[in-house]
Length: 606
Image 1 (cartoon, rainbow, N blue to C red):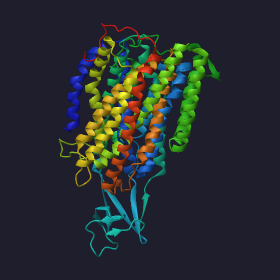
Image 2: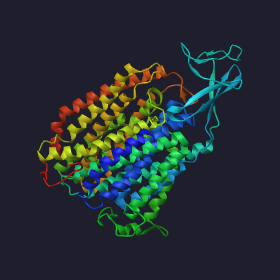
Image 3: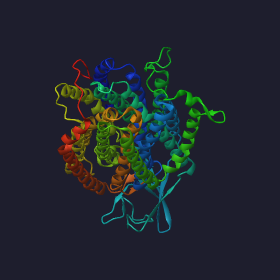
Image 4: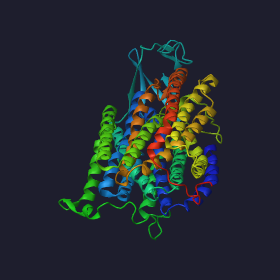
């Protein structure tokens, strides 16, 4: 058994019992949302775990193109909730939006499993072509140049170019190829399968747009505005998110590495199918009869009669929205292939949503409501900085694990590069109950530092994680690979930072915002994450390396680049975090008077 699977089983058993016990002490229906989002995150993170490496190793896109495509995809994943949230607020209601989005996600994830044979590199030198053969996936990737039917390993030449190892003197090309003396091209990349790939991504993006903001909004609707269980409830919900993410990163990475990319993506799609069934049937054993578990008044359309009224011939408003959603998939299919256009759309969306909230505060809010919304927007800005660095886990850190980390590989003690992303989920499972108890303990004693201070701590920790990798580079071996413990420590700090920010931020969006724009503000939170993905893609491009056959050509240069970039972003994040911490007492005043804590409330692990 893979060591990560064994560790995951132990962690899950140790943490699930107290978490499930605490779920019973929270509002009815939380457990349905818990498991729906668990399966949705299983599908999303299962795909994300292997997505970037799939592009660089299967399609042989170069690093900068892959980072840009990944950034466009991830940005749109967090941008589309802005539309999905507004449609749910005004027309569909959150329940219908979630069910529709889940169906799109099932279709998208299963379509990702459709693949062609791998593309291949061909090296041209002085008019002759030489095939680059490759085997393995993720960190097990190995490439050779084929010369006269024999395979030879290669690496960087001193001063630039490529050195072919153990090449006989009688070979038709020299053992050292100058940097400008050879050309590399890609063959076998079928445009049909490339379009299927981007179409699958478009379905996933649209599905997340309808599902993601609305399920978080329903969680908030289960609690009264000043219910002190709210933060703990979101932390329990966040545990469910990370339970799904953890097992996706463990299983999809392993299956993708061992059996093929399509099997990894297909497993993610099956997970989303389970999530859809749990939500639609409103029971964990979705094949059993019985009444729904969510309160009837939660998530319903604001005007059911208007939703059923025909607006285009016999087509009512509800089905018109569904149809426009499918047409929107075609638009997204074009956008996801055009990173600059996505970045322009992000800029326009950011300006539009900011203008919307300014007008809303002026026209419809009291002074206290306006101050609370200003605080919510400041927290969104802080989350952009945090998630810009945190979400490098799927891009730059994913490739760092593949290319620059010492990974055990002896059967039982085996960890693939994709599975290293599960460290974050494992730490969440262990620490989420602790943090849920901590926030309630501080609240009861009127010692809670406030949301802004928690965000400041998060920024300091996410920056510190990257500085740990910079430190670890001093212990790299002769192949320029850093001991695994340093990457694990990075994820530990990123996790404690995430627990200071993400569940707290989700809760803050619901308690600081008037109900009429609750889903819109939640979508704005995800818009901040979308901006973070776009900025993160530009940072990841700074780490791009030359690859041949999906294998990095110069590991030493790759490590040096990672050290330079990680050092820069680490110190910048710490500086911003310190600044936010200094002004946090002033920001806390914007929230207004705090409700008294309810001593009888319970949280996970308490």
